[in-house]
Length: 177
Image (cartoon, rainbow, N blue to C red; front, top):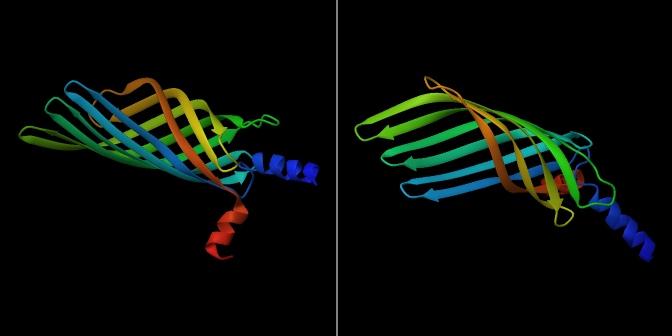
């Protein structure tokens, strides 16, 4: 009986990234400095189209203030991620790519403008599963941002977040299938 329980737990521990599963979660950024502040939330959700391969949609909401300049941005776009299984491990490295298209509103005293934004991110990271469904994750990589009428910015980006992995059967049960 004990061997059967261990086998079931091992299968469940490695079942988070199988075809038919779902992933929801996101990242949160809060930054404060003298005269500067930034708050970003990036929820995301995806479906595993194949074992270890998830694709979906993410939305970025970014609010910042630097001196008298205030910006707010909303962007959305697709992402794709490929996980690498490490046998008998709660840690899964992954590769991640995303593209977001959005709108940036900038307010300075006496003036307001609106510009289209495009953002591409390519990185690698890792997810540490604290149980069979919840993973804490970190991802780092190359970030390219272009705002209409402004020179493109390129650089390094590091994010920390979490994801909830729902097995396909759990989603069907919630939906009443």
